Image (cartoon, rainbow, N blue to C red; front, side, top):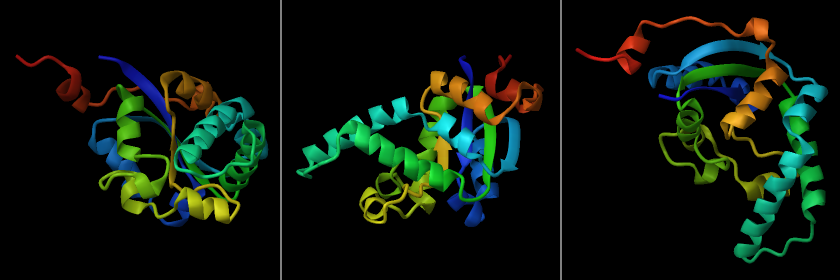
Length: 190
């Protein structure tokens, strides 16, 4: 068993659409444990630390390659696109309250990513958070010069989660406890 921690942010669009309870329920129903949970309005400093320019360069390179493979003529360099992405993401995540959570469980990062769906709601499978409640696309967000509205952020790797968690939570805010269901989920039978 690989017990991991991961960070989830219910973004301002998810909060405004009153999806908090439904999203939390989906994570709890698969056996993930909430170690921390709070609502806050992100500061520009938190947002900039979360959406690092270096991380966005990798996203920009992937985006450019993806768009070129679909015949789209891209004029932005990876640096220019990363700057644009960072500006849009910071503006969106600081626009209203978010709900930040730390979840724990066996391979929590992978489990959460499956529940959340693809980054673009348009391509997310039905049954995922973004597939069921997301309506945005890259084309629409680009045309509006804004970040994609995809309801939640979920750490992509264990290393990413370990980097992101301290941006949003102090050590004192993270709880340690045992749920009775953990024996059912992870204990030995018989």
